[in-house]
Image (cartoon, rainbow, N blue to C red; front, side, top):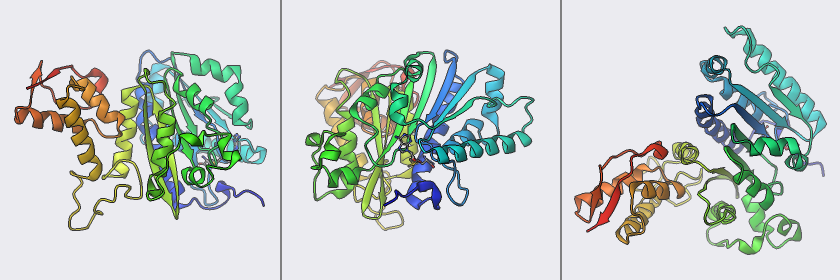
Length: 377
Ligand SMILES: C[S@@+](CC[C@H](N)C(=O)[O-])C[C@H]1O[C@@H](n2cnc3c(N)ncnc32)[C@H](O)[C@@H]1O
């Protein structure tokens, strides 16, 4: 049976949500590096790019990346021109026919864009490279490896694979250990759960390390995300967050990885914009009261309560000793760091802890936060 082609029909609602998260994630990421003085070049990769649109002309991931790299007021083009900063788009689509359609879609995008652009020269002329290689081939290429390894280049890597087989342990670790490289990938988590004993699945994922709870089907993508989290060496500071997308009876998901707190702050923010309860799904993963219902209370959701309680214990047991440690702990658990400030403030008010240093309430840009120590009373 021929494989279904996502670009040959209208995008499903769940696909639209996935694309929207890609869009918002990149929207947050891109300007950071446009304005980052030590970054010389920006590389944006879409490794499973598709043909550019769905059957109704809705933009797919490569066109979304181009739209966002322009900005809603073309502000990024103006800034790039002013800063003489170079951006390279690497779009890859294995199917030749789809690659040709992708060429056409990117050309059409640029033509239309240029026709309304006040800049003399388009900053994206001759910067879009479309290929029809297999992803495995690209991962092995010296050229790509050199870009990944370059500390002056910022890299955004989007991996919208079908299924699960392309993001192997080696691929994941290669991306996670490359400097200035943030990535987001799609994975069919329900499929892995259902076929975890099949050799074809075991070849790609060590399913012995997956502990699915049969009674909690909604949580299968959490388990998959933990599998990837656990691949990161324990002594490496690294951030991973995930988002579960329910489509009918199946659960798919996104996994985002970054080695910088700012990258994580941005992605976590996007996830909480989508899901006010848990910041991680479109399916009310923790079974909170739904919006519009009598007891709906987004300030005290299951996830927020759990994280606050765990954090309070860690502080009182002396395991978290400073605001920086606390902010990072909250962030690494997929919550917005402001939760730490709430907990710290409440412990101070209850006279359970004392702050050594200036008690600041900063909870964003945490790489720049002034540190204070927490003394348990
Ligand atoms: C889920 S679709 C991507 C859709 C795209 N992101 C969009 O928004 O339209 C996955 C794409 O990857 C392509 N593909 C499959 N295996 C591949 C491989 N090994 N390397 C590169 N592309 C591949 C498929 O032809 C398909 O177009």
